[in-house]
Structures are given as structure tokens and as C-alpha cells.
Length: 171
Image (cartoon, helix red, strand yellow):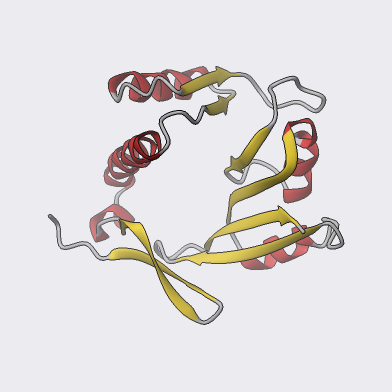
């Protein structure tokens, strides 16, 4: 509708298009517009995932009650009955369950995230971590066991700040 281009990134020298659009240019300059755009994008992503795999359970862990309220409102309005919002801070030795995919924003180092979620991994659990500067990511990755895990750093082109997605999985 707005003439937005598909979101793309480069992987092993090839350009990959993802199934969603880049944010509008004015969202890069205005935090309120970006927040509105992000809220819409979050809803679209959750809705798409729920439609593709309605039998899969999704658990969202958030320590902020205010953010949990927002997440519950979105899940309720979109009738995402397979989504559970948990208002809790992640702790080691938690009993949240085992998951195929664990994702997190940049709230802790990669090693700390992996340590905190050690009880929550299965044999082939994948991590999808949203991180900032590549130099910091590379430093953090020196702390993970390269004999048991492989990783990929995907650069995001979302504006002037460095943003990356780090994918980590067992060998």
C-alpha cells in the first residue's frame, strides 16, 4: 500500500527476501511512528505464525506488567488462543518448559541468555537473538562452545544504528 520494499538480507553472498516489508522511512525518524509500525508488525507476525501453525503453542515471557498487558491485548484481539503471556523474569533452573525456538531482545549477553535458558532447551533448540553492534556480538560469541554450537550473524538494514539477528543452533 505504501510502496514499501520487502525486507531483505544477505546470506552467504545471496540476497534473501523475507515475507514482510521494511518499515516506512518516516518511522526511522519518529519514535512514535516506529512504535505504531512495530505494534502493527508484531500483530501481523504473530497472526501469520498462528495461521501457519495453529496447533503450535507460543509462550511470551515478559517481566514488565505493562508490556504483558499490551501483549495480552494483542493476542486477545487477534484470537491467538495458542499464545500464553507469562509475566515473570527469566531465572536459571526455571520450570517454564522446553522449547524449539528461544528468542530474546538484547537484554543480556549471549552466554547469559543461553545460561538462563539452559533448562528450556531441547536437543535441537534454536536461538534467535536480536542484538546491536557486530563487534560486541563477535566478542560475546567467543564465550559459547563452538564444539557444540554453530551461529550466523544477519545484518538488519533498519536505519542508522547497527542491528543484527544472531541465529545459534546445536551442531
